[in-house]
Length: 126
Image (cartoon, rainbow, N blue to C red; front, side, top):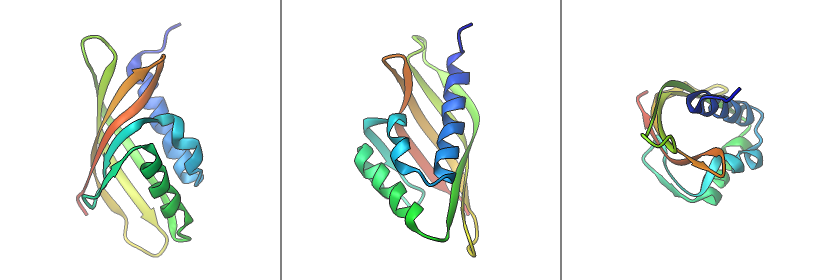
């Protein structure tokens, strides 16, 4: 049985949430294109997987950091089934600090049979 692309992307997103909660930045590498572009909730720009992984590692080293949880609301595929747009809501949690929340949009692309994140935009709303 073949997994639908939307289900594969949703499963990979759930796995990234688990790895972030486990504070395992290094294991996030296979989920990002080496040239990924990420705009964080504060508007800062991260270019490349090394910058993204370093940012995660820095936050995970903060004893107050709990997790980021991204909840998929929609996944839309291109006509060829090789790229997809994922839209959803995100929550950032820290001990003894208010939650941060917002929306996000991620671009996924299929590379050698696996879905990887090409771009992400996070918008902080609280």
